[in-house]
Length: 600
Ligand code: F6R
Image 1 (cartoon, rainbow, N blue to C red):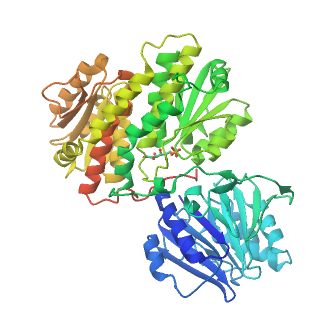
Image 2: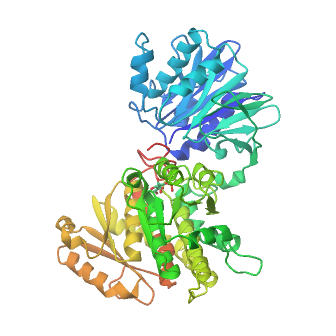
Image 3: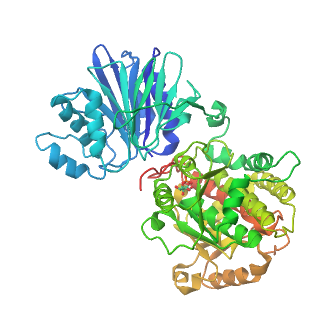
């Protein structure tokens, strides 16, 4: 979702801001803008569309050493040049960019801005106009910002510049992510470290309801009551080359291909010096004390949670419930006596999950976050963290983070099982190694999978994915991948459930992708395929070696059944990728979607 950058230093600010915004493109956006400030005042450039469109209108002759920039994912008001950030106060003195949602913006507008003519439809403009109002009443800028932040309800990450104080960027944060990067003779502001990793790897985390005064030579953190906060920077461990596409046409394809490597890296990261898989003993002890595990997540991470629940229940024999974060937040079930919560989130910033975490912490329950982003909000605020070690995932559609989530969940489940005295009947290190090899084989079968995408999906308007048990969960993920990047209407169903209503949608030629990797339900899912074929469906059966029959379209290498989702998802990812390519869709940046969903 929206992204923020800011720079104050000695170099050409425009280029640093634009490059930073390009690094944030992956988060999803529909318009962008920058404001740079020099002795002539503030110069604002903004445009609907891509950063390339913004670049085209930026005046190259304007030089400056202070500036802020923004990519906007529309919430209040359509994507347009007027609604794009930065927004300015009526006098032009204050210029501001904002991520998040100001829930009480309409009330604030009525209360404070009756006499102000707002030019945009955004909640953000209300904020900058109120800052101006307080400044006109005599408040110094810092005080005006503090007073404004104190009356905002909702989420915000804000960067503000003042024409009358050209040596400073003012920053505020609540719920939405924001970091301050520190350097020699310059400092920066960024929604995530990736945006500014080209200039510094030293970042200071901001907590909710903090503000920061960023100058070229100093960064001062304060609470909203003015109290100074001391916090040392941390080193962001991102290799700048990890965020380049290299020779790949799309990040998504690169990230699909990286999966065998990610699984091998995971094994290494979670092995102790004797080669045994291990998880922090505090985490295992906390989990052993729990009578039930609640997994909370959204989208692809929720699908990983479904698979993970099976792994934990089967190996460690602990009951697990899996919940969609946005529902759990408003509709919390009656909890067991000693629950333990697991939040699964690639970004670690998903607002829906965070809202649940806040409630869970208020109730005093232990929480573990499984995330790809060290230092992310969900990681910081939970008691424990397990990292995915998948490297930055840039494509909006999650691929390698999903398989890494499954890998971590498998390791967690098996270590927990051993700790509880349950024998794990297989060698997980060896079986994950087999998974990585199988992934590699599948990544080499792109041509065949592209042909399947052409055969089944080139003209269809819809598609069904069916499976049972683990394969049902993978079907849900396959359907999500297909719809989000190719815009084909796709649904994942439990094989036995289709006949209870949805089978009415099957007509001549409707593609039905059936997954069969579980011996126990192989015959049942094949029976479900017969039912849809009898109604005209065009079946594409993807089975696991050992269960294959002549009618199958694709066979994946044999792996441990409990780990099969790590492997069976790969043909589904690649089929979705090619279906999107064949339809000329923007694979890495699908319409309407954002990588890091920081609003509820
Ligand atoms: C789909 C996808 C989303 C995310 C969801 C949660 O490909 O990426 O469904 O899984 O928005 O995001 P995280 O995992 O960052 O909490």
